[in-house]
Image 1: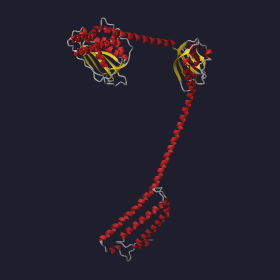
Image 2 (image 1 turned 45 degrees about the horizontal axis):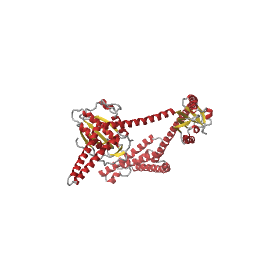
Image 3 (image 1 turned 135 degrees about the vertical axis):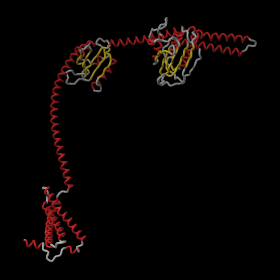
Image 4 (image 1 turned 60 degrees about the horizontal axis):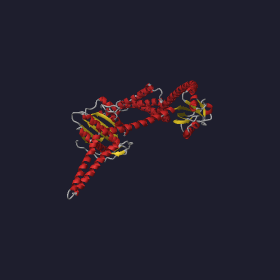
Length: 569
């Protein structure tokens, strides 16, 4: 063994490898450094493999890793020998090391090719990641299924418990319902027997199957007699067809019930008014089968309503009588003014007649002057006739009528009629009548009566006043949307107190010593009958304002009313 080792390191006649490099220092350094670095790296790699194998006990192909480490270690040793043979020619040792390296290399290559199919069969990292992802997904799904199964089991248990509780509650509720039904039927029977109103049951054949005492007394038939009758037979003849149709609709399901006021004919032949209320038939399981009907005798109420309507009619007649009386009384107050209005055209006619006689007596007669005088006489006669016609319209007793009229024209006619009265009381009258007001629907005489009353009241309020006496009559469109006309009468009299404004339109309330208190009450009734309203406010700086607004008919849109502005009187 010693001789073998000595032979490996024997130099014999060999020369170091440095002679081949001519002992060039730079070249020697290059080889030394290169082989040393490669040897260092080759020695380091096997130790890394050994560390890796020791840490991974589950690693496959551990023999290949060991052979690869030996092969790399042998390769590193050959590089060490490359540095050694530069100065020491141990070429036999170098050959032995290379032989060992060759053997290890062949074994490593053979082992690698032998393990190649198994290595290729191993899954790749992507496949491993995908398999791991699928495994995680399967684990998650299995966990979800298990959780869902647990939840389903818990929910099933809850449902079973809830359903059990519901069944118990249903049983208890059914028992309570049965008890309530029995109590209800008992109450129904008690109410049926003791009710003060009539109660009857009608079957599908429209025959009475039950009737309480109140209904029997109401209609005059006994329960036995009613069993052969039905609602149609006891109904007044004119109402029977309607009753039959309502019962057919109820029994066929087209109606769920009805309430109606109708007439019954009693057994003795007298007719009574009743209010009948019916509903759908009761459930077949009930002991009270049929159509329940509640009948209330309203004969006295109907008689009271008829008497109330008659009283209303009489009240309207009295109100019309009072309105007529008010107009006549007002015209009596204006008698002097009316006489003056008529006396003027009569005096003028006499004057023109005397002038015509003088022109006829002239020689020769002046026929042209006579013709003009006669024309003036005709005009004066027409003037007097117009005054009389207006007075006749205001005092005649006629039923109300609705005409299309211009409110400005009606006001001007009343103002003309009261001219002498306001002049006598030294009152200044002005009018501010708006242009383009539409014509309204109303009774001309009644509305002129309202205007006349308002003017006369204002004149009387200012007659004892020592200050300025001013009366302003104005018209305009009613606010807020201008869909009507507004009339205002303003005076400069002593005005109204808050207490008198509240009661001003009450019947029989008056502030005049000799007044009846009906004028403004009648005026308000007239305006309200026309769909308008009448009210009073204070005037500034003094006096009172009485206004009324009248609506327009929906189809009214005639803006062609003339306007007028009277000069100061």
